[in-house]
Image (tube, rainbow, N blue to C red; front, side, top):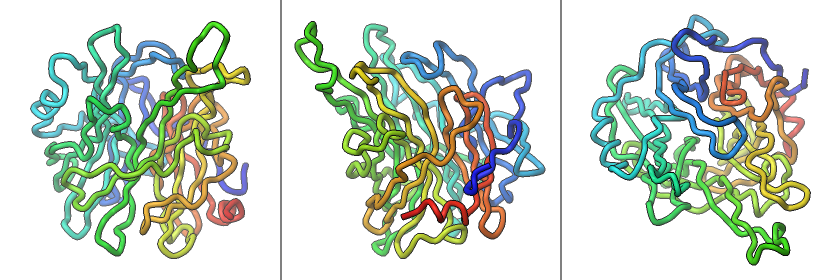
Length: 353
């Protein structure tokens, strides 16, 4: 056991006759975190960690009597979803489903917001194109959600104008939230310039980018990239980066205008010879975010958690504070099941700058 965390035994949700694979748990704080939403896989082609793997997903509600055990409830129904999704896609695009849900509660307006990935891929098998938008629905609870225009709509002409995996920021002094999302980029790599190739190959990266929200229910604006794996020399996050849950100031305080957050990171996209590889290990680390300025001040040089059963992926989606200096982090392992980990503020504090 690490002084910073403890891995729980077993799975948070056991498979049932409907779903064997699940990921990306999010919980509703209004229910004392006894209900939420999860992404369930209805079809998987390819292998985890290998390029070309495709998951088709649906969102279902979950409920539980404790924070360590939940069951899958009925499907999450969102009014108006079909019309908006048809407008986004059109005949040339195939909808893989709604993915990666995140619940955020606006206490002042007494409103629930649900954000999720809308994943579209080209129906033309000769192309590897995809459109990744950050969808949005709102209501008073999980049974009254209505879909709206996406918070961020992918640009068909701009590969980098893409958003998913939202991490909500506190309101700053200007009344704006500099939220964070996973976005993407592609760059040429001179490392893979072999004699039989005229040009370096293109490497795909996942990046962390600011999404400026003046109204949490209206479309946001994509801002600058605040973490690009290609511009840093951090081994555990050299290929893909994704912002994870915010850790409350009551759990651990890292100073004025700053909050500690979880980062999901993947090792480099090149092997030792410079040859591209699809994915290496995903693990969970930490970063300090200045939400007033929309800047990342520090990223942990080493990961915090990698599940001892993971073959490739440990990916965090939700944190719940459970007591003084303790809380539960939920993460999915190999895009297959959800695990709980207890985090200890005293141990984490020793890892910070």
